[in-house]
Amino acid sequence: MSQRIPLAWLQLRHEKMKLFAAVSGVMVSVVLMWMQLGLLQALFASAVEFHGAVNGELIVIHGQYEYLLRNQPFSSRLLHRLLGSPHVKEIYPIYTQPLEWKNPWTGEVRTIQCYGIDSDKPAMNLPMLASQLPILRQTDTFLYDRKSRPGFGPVLEEFARGAIVEPEINRRKVKLVGLTDLGASFGVDANIVMSHANFLRLAADRPSGQIDFGVIKLQPNSDVAEIQSQFQAILGKEVDVLTREELCERELVYWRGATPIGVVFTTGTFVGFFIGFIVVYQILYTDVTTHLPHFATMKAMGFSDGYLFRMVISQSLQLAILGFVPGSLIAGLLYTGLRSATLLPLQLEFSRGIFLLLATILMCTISGALAIRKLRTADPADVF
Image (cartoon, rainbow, N blue to C red; front, side):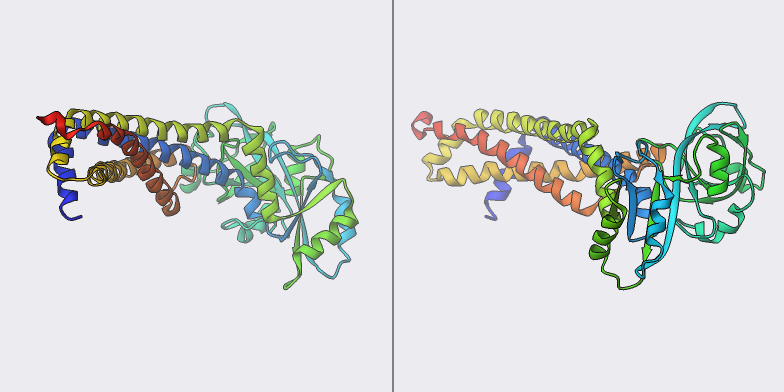
C-alpha cells in the first residue's frame, strides 16, 4: 500500500492543470452542498425559534393551525377548564400577529411580528425577558428583538446611546423599553414583545378572549404523555394539545411539505453532488485513456487489474480530500457573510461536515469506479 499511494499521487499531479480542474470541481461541489444544506437547516431552525422558547411542557393551538404566520385564534375560556387540574402549575396565553411598523426615521412602513404575553408570567424563555416584565406593564411599551434584520431603522444603535425610540405600530406611538433575543426567519424579519394589554391596544380589531397559544406549565415529575391525552379529551376537537417537540414538528411539516423551499434546497444539494461527479469522472476518464499504453505496460510487467483499479480509486479519494478541505473553508467564510447579512443561524456543524465528507468520498469513488472500466481494454499486447 505504501508503494501504491505515491504512484497514484505522482500520476495525479503529473498534469497540474488537470489536477487543478479536478480539485476545483470537487471544491465547487462541496461548497454548493454546504450552502444548500446549511440554508435548509437554517430555515428549519429559524422557523421554530418561537416554538422552542415557549415556557411549558404542553401547548394548546387551534385544530386548523398551519404555521406561525397563518394560525387560527381560539377562545381562552377553553383553558379555564384546565385550571383546576392538580397537574397544572401555570397557564400562559400568548397572542401573536403581524403588525405595521412605521420607521420613525424614514417613515417607511414594514410588517413586524408582535407577541403579546401576560406581564405577570414568563410565557417564553427568552434572554432578559423575565427581568423586564415589570416595565412591560407600562402603557404603550415593548421589547425589541436584537436579532431582527436591518430595515426597521437604527433601533439598536439609538437605544444603546440612550435615545428615546418611539415608532408607530398600527398607527399608535409606542416606546421601546428593552431588548430580547428571538431571531429572524425566512418568514419574519423582526419581532417585538409586549404585554397583553398593549397588544390589544394595537390590534384593536382583535377580541380580547381570542388567543393564539395556550402554554401549560406542569408540576414537576408529571407524566406529560398521559396528561396530554387527558387534556385533549377535556378540551375537545376544536384545539390540539401538543408537546413542545410536536409543535416544532407541526411547524416544520408546513415548511417541508407546503412550500417549495425544502425541495429547492434538497435539489440544489443533489445538483452539487452531480457537478462534482461529472467533473471528477471526466478528469479520471481522460487520465486513464491518456495513460492506457502505460497501464498496458504495467500489466505486461505483472501488475494485476486489481492493483491498477485500486490506484485509480486512490486518486479518487485524494481528489475528494483535496477538494473537501478548501471547499469547507470557503463555505465557512460564506456562512459568516450570510449570517451577518441575513441573521439566519448558519453554522458549520460537525455532523453535517462528516455527512458531506462521506458524500464527497462517495461521489469521487463512483466517478473513479466508472472511469476504470476503460482499464479492461488495456491489453499488454498493445505495447508491442
